[in-house]
Image 1 (cartoon, rainbow, N blue to C red):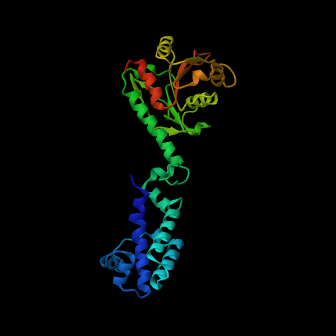
Image 2 (image 1 turned 180 degrees about the vertical axis):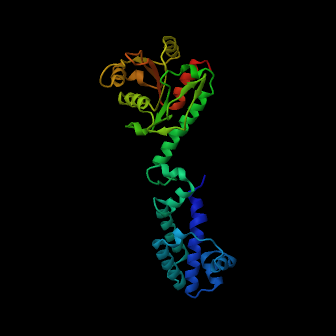
Amino acid sequence: MKFVEEIVVEEFLPTFRSMLAEALRDRGLTQHEVAETLGISQSAVSKYAHGDVSRRAEVLDDERVRRLVEEVAEGLATGDTSRVRALVEAEVLIRRLEEGDLLARLHEDAMPELAAHDGYVRIHDPDSDLRASEAVRASLRRALRRLTNTSGFAGLIPNVGSNLVACLPDAAAVDDVAGVPGRIFDVKGRATVPGDPEFGVSEHVASVLLSARAAGADARAVINVRYDPDLLADLEAAGYDAVEFDAEASGDPITEALAAAGPETLTSTFVAYQTGGYGIEPITYVVGPEADAVAAAVVGLLGA
């Protein structure tokens, strides 16, 4: 794990300071004066002067960095620019270079996982999409671990496989919903999760979640398990409302059935189910406000 601040400290600042020290020396400042101006030791200035500090080519060649170095060096040498203003100008440039620019690219080089997202975002932004999507994926990992560590869960997986999905707060499409790529299958009595949760990989179960939301449910997660009248009775006995829909009906039967059931049914965690049809396996869907809630309902069926 590499922080963008580490890129600034390890990659940008040594190069920037060496360029600034060189520019100040070119304007007649002594090694001692350069050290005092930059707030660094004379030995550091000496290392810069003798090329003993590794410099990043991308920073050296960036015209904006070169221009700022010249402007700051000139101002510091003449006394027109204070150290505070020099710091502010450097900080402003750093913030700009962090946002989808030079420092963002260097950060992606150090953290290739960031390249999987649509453009670099400021990861220290508390409202960033990256933070929200990673929170969803983390909630799925926790819930999946709980389910797969519970004895008997594999027996609840239908023939088509299970999936546990969760969505972003304002989800409107399948790409806003994360799930298990390839579904969860029963492999010799063991629930097998083939990969880390990803967005846009579960069209069917994700569509169930979106349908529930369209009906007015404050739902953020869904899991599908096999349908069995006894399991359904156990869920209802545990306090979960259950709504049946027709899997062969046209349109959006889930949204229609849930909307008809009324808003009192769509609170907290509830169940939607269909009893099958021609070529359609009967399935039970546990719908809830978060992945942990639907996992808890399923684990409750197993007495764990």
